Image 1 (cartoon, one colour):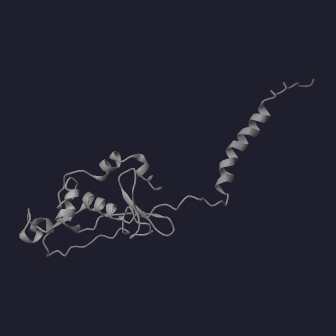
Image 2: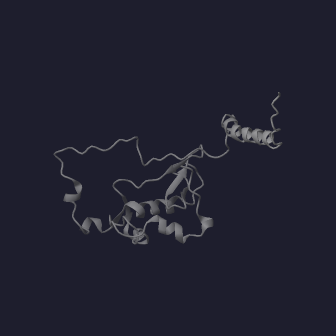
Length: 175
């Protein structure tokens, strides 16, 4: 007595081949040696390798020793910190043609400022720790921003990015 097995459906073999190809393509595509023409990822200069500034134990914190208001020596200049300092730097550098830290600065859609180096890598710009001393007449333009005369309240750069036409903004560099 011989056993008769039913004939398998015709679509099983092509389906198995198709699934094998689909599962194998990502593996072989990941091993390809093609170089991407996209610029390299940005360098975040805001994180200096985990180094933190050490304050001596016998020195009092600066926040307790600062006085509010302007003294007579400060009336000629205003300190811009935070968003005000970044917007000031952006406005000074946005029309330059060079590359690098002293070259053209860009405002991204997420409200951050960056520049590109000679290898076309993006570098995020951070405000100087002590702020920027700016003549009072020039600083008036930044009065509404956070960091104007060390003020913690005010607008930030995401507000500016929302107000500008999309054609004037640069895309966020790849993270």
